Structures are given as structure tokens and as C-alpha cells.
Length: 139
Ligand code: SF4
Image (cartoon, rainbow, N blue to C red; front, side):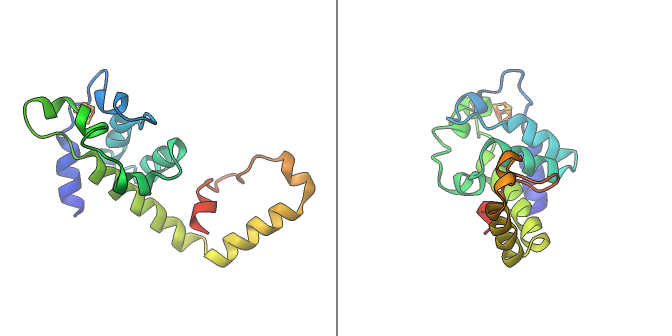
């Protein structure tokens, strides 16, 4: 699976003006995501995706990619578009898995309850340093 995804990512031309992102209603940074993946920075690639869209993993499965990102990919004009959905799904899945093992659901829930019970915490940023705001989705 990983090899297939990497091979697909290598097909990306790293366009100066990525039409894939323009075609995405939420402007997914496809080019940057692929660059990070190819550099082996999976964590950063996942963080980039989820910062842009916390429902990234769901969108990678249900979006009409043939109309949005893949439908706008320059390679699709004369051949096969980069399979952005597969790449995004691969990165999102691994990103979620990593945090599922790192943060036990019970602990994440407890953390959230504690946070809600502390009035002064409302003034703090939603996430603690190093804790992604995906935490709610993991619960
Ligand atoms: S349009 Fe296609 S080839 Fe260009 S950056 Fe986006 S995915 Fe890569």
C-alpha cells in the first residue's frame, strides 16, 4: 500500500499554480501535502491536512474528487489525474492511528471534561501545546 501511494505521489508535477487546490472547495494544500509525504514527514503532512480540515479523513472518502481536486489536476487533461483522494486518505488514516494509540479515548475524554470544568481555561487556546485539535474527533 505504502509503495503504491508513494508511486502515485511521485506522479505529481508540483505545479506552480496547483489547480487541484483551486478545485477543492476548502483549498486542500495538495501540493504541500504530497511534498511532505515524499520527504517522509508523515506527521507534518497529517497535521497540515487536519489543520486545513478536521474532517480530512471523511472527505478523503466521500468527496466527489473527480469533480474537485482530481477533476482539476493538470495530469487529468491528457491522462490520469493524481489520485489525491487515495494519498489524502492514506495520510489521514495514519495520522489518526498515531493519535489513537497515543491518546486513549478515555483519557482524551477526561482531558476534555477537565478542560470544560475549568472556567479560566476558556481563555486558553483550545489545544494544549503539542496536542492537536483533532482530539475532539478522536473521542
Ligand atoms: S494539479 Fe495535479 S500535478 Fe499539479 S500539483 Fe495538483 S496534484 Fe500535482
